Length: 327
Image (cartoon, rainbow, N blue to C red; front, top):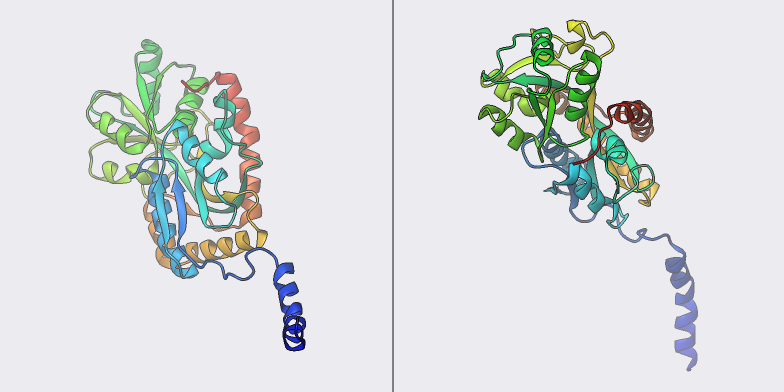
């Protein structure tokens, strides 16, 4: 080796060592390409509506597009598993729900992922009431009248929900338990197909996240009997809460939040959280979420993780008592 080549190698050596010692991804700014946001339900439901709103605005903050991908099935498990098994690089996110992150683990005999270990919470996107909807096949004008009908003919009334184990399903099961009635559950793969059958009279009633059903309510195609939260929804002030019918402890709150694979670098999780929280703080985004009947989130990773833990404790007891299992 001649002296000139040896000198060049010695000169380059510190730079080569620095490159080898640098953490993975340090040479590449984040994000440097489009991101993917997996929605584990069909298009048109609340999860999908909120995901597309956040994808657009957070993408603007990040300077990269966020592509929404619908992967429905198994109560959200198919889409959630796809994210859990994705590369933990911050480029794949999940729009998680109460079902995918809390209740499915108690309902399905075999889970393709561990909701506590396989994900890192990014931030809460929104909280939403569920709403109890009926069509013309059911002559009830209040929750009290519905309960009385169900008691007269146990098992005759059926109700649709977006999936087994999701918050709309749990809304019906909690009403069954607290009112001492027996309505039959009919699960669907999302809000859109369930609404189609409700409008066609294939099912008597439906529990749904308010944002995905609000347009049908406002158009007068379905009747809203009650919301499942402790207070009335601001967009439906004339619709009472279920607890106003005498079930004082009745409450179901549906939430939607972003998560990434557990091994995603913390710095990238923080970057995503800051971008999404900034998007959720935009006046036009907050206004749109509120117009849908939901409340904007944006409280950060720690607060979202706390919500997941709290609801895990609450719903584990309800599901066990009701004996809910995936069909």
